[in-house]
Length: 68
Image 1 (cartoon, rainbow, N blue to C red):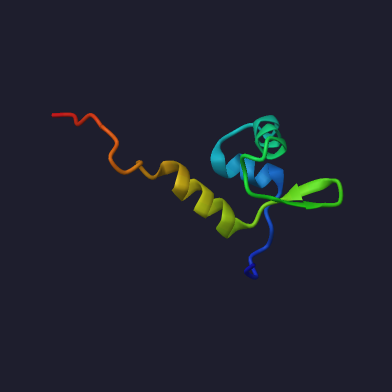
Image 2 (image 1 turned 90 degrees about the horizontal axis):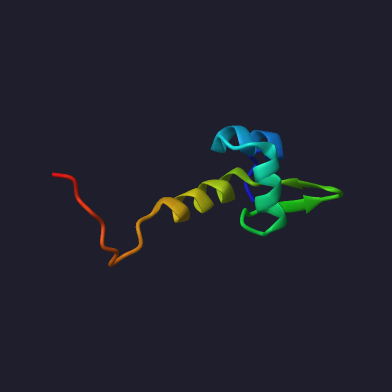
């Protein structure tokens, strides 16, 4: 883990332009990488970035439509 401060659910919601309720649902479903600290979750910024990169990368061999 890096020296970056851990992100709160509110901070992640703001960065992803989502509601906090949506972020909570994603955390509880195990969709977002997070650390449980006590009764709350914290997200490592570098893990969030890696998760975003994995979600936005086009799968290899996918049939993408090109606009002409």
